[in-house]
Image (cartoon, rainbow, N blue to C red; front, side, top):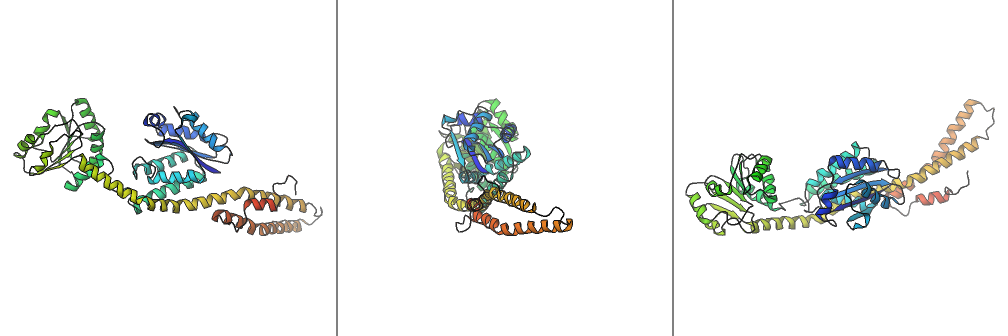
Length: 420
């Protein structure tokens, strides 16, 4: 069986299309069951994330690529028509290599992101639970997971912060290392503020407060992050006298220099300000004040650029790891390709053996007949064993000096319609 991958991802499809075909775990399980039950499918499973929805199948059908695309369109809710121009269709080695690249983060919207490793693992486990997994996809997904682990352990593909939210958290970590018990004020409740808040959770249980223009949004984010309280934007200047860290992702000119000067007269500890606003939320001259450390979006973007540079430099090393993990699977797959010819040869040899045994005398002693049976079985196995082993060896090593399955079939006339 060969492997095929068909799907929609961020390379070709806009967000409006990707969000329509995104599947939750229950939906992915349902599509896996439906496709695995099709008569031409040997194995099947679905990988669905925020940036991709992909169907992997193993099949011996000659037209499996076209059938896989048709199955995706039919079974994935809201999937666009096949001619929509958003599908990626890969076959054989290209499909296998693509999966390894996905697991290693080379196909992610953010190069080297780590979340995809767990998503590939979940798809693998779901495929097994839903009966879609067999030896071909099982081995392939195991190779992909090994490749992903090695890529992150042996290279810098996932080093550094490559989003503004994570870069902001990295700045906080550099100053405080941990936030246990520190007072943190998060200003804003939009996407960037949510991203910053989630990243801050990794630095320990801070005494977090959320300020936002819309109280309902502030309450929602505070509940999601486990914040102690919320406050209106008008109270942000007053909070400067108490907070250790203030992260701002809201409107412009929220904090002026006079606000900071008043706050500094009432505090002894340094104040870390991280301004993610465009336009800026904090007066840039605040950085001139003693005890104030201000990082704006430009500083964060320099951190992101440095991290992406390191990740891009790691890509050749990741590609080497992928090839090391893919090569054994490809060799095993090529060996599988020789098995149908070997099975046909074994069946033909058994027919020949039984046809010759029919010439034994009918009144032959049963013990002698049994001895002849065993002898002929051993002869067939010895005569064919070396040839078939070398065919499998040649297929796995892709060695043209060794016989191929095609040559085996032609030498023994296995494709001829005449019997033994």
